[in-house]
Image (cartoon, rainbow, N blue to C red):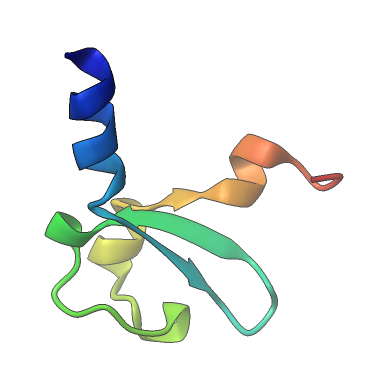
Length: 59
């Protein structure tokens, strides 16, 4: 079922917040280690979604 597939993919997500409060949504598969946003490599950061771009400032 589609809901089961979405639930499984959601379990692979991690949210990483940087020191300025900016939050990124990343899949575990795209990260070498789960850690602070400041430690994300440039390559890893490009594979994450900057949630401020999706949700906007008023979220």
